[in-house]
Length: 404
Image (cartoon, rainbow, N blue to C red; front, side):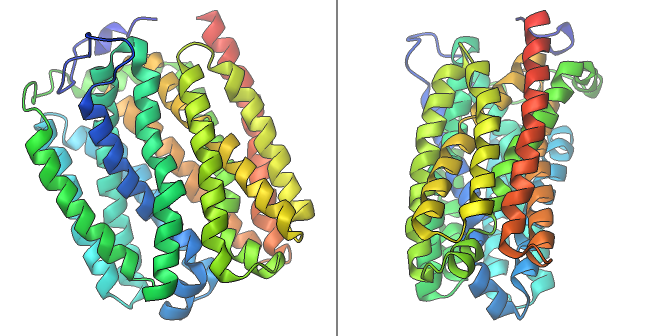
């Protein structure tokens, strides 16, 4: 399906790869490595909730707001900054976003005030949303239409790698060295990545040959908004449980805090498998994955509600949750790109916002239910309901795609 006429002017900073249909350009891998750092930051709090709550003298439900506010910052930052930076050089924008991201982490690491930490997380999130909005467009255009889902798979692969390595290692490091330790490490790595981007990203095609009118016009697609809704529901469906994985494992299943990073490694291994499968099928048979994944997330979340007190069972369910949840990420981003064409920064930015609307809503509702009479059964119940709703919207996306 060709891009709408309103977005036919390309904005990528790198040309699409033409040498080999099986080889992605290096810039895609570079951008994916940065998403690893940013995704580690977004999710690192999940494994350190008790530590953060104790250090800042707040409840674990309040500590969960550090995930919620990050998601809210990405939700607002992605579309707003995609428009604000519409005609700025791509390389300079990406590098600047990463440097401010690093500085925000320094503030978090130095502060013991909950409000300051919240505000700093919000700033870091806006920078993350900016990077995702612009970096996704660059990656999709660099890969070309035949490999755009694979390129999105590499971007999402950064999220997967964060689940496999970043978050578990950060959790273990935070338990040993204090919760601020991982933020110092992320600040240093982000600053180094900014320097690498400044050197490696090409400067050609820096200006964007588009307009706000063209960007907004592409949002008239009804199918696009159903894709956004599906994205938010699917993302929230597994994040509801994962945001509170530490209390779910330690308080209900009786698992030692030192084992939590190992369970998160298992979750990340499942996420890796899901990402690979989703990215491979995303260009050819996306709906073979999309609707069934929603149903499987619903069943897995329901299993955590029912059997969350049995340690071996809940560990296995979290591994499955990672696999089913991450299998759809590349697909829904690619469906948004296909709906409007890879030239539209705002549409891709709103796709990023959709992910984070799901994260913000699910982490907030999960925290609210955790503090209610439902206790540790609350977050996975929220996830099961969201996943069931996502099945219905995924069916609608399938029908609209076939009718187009």
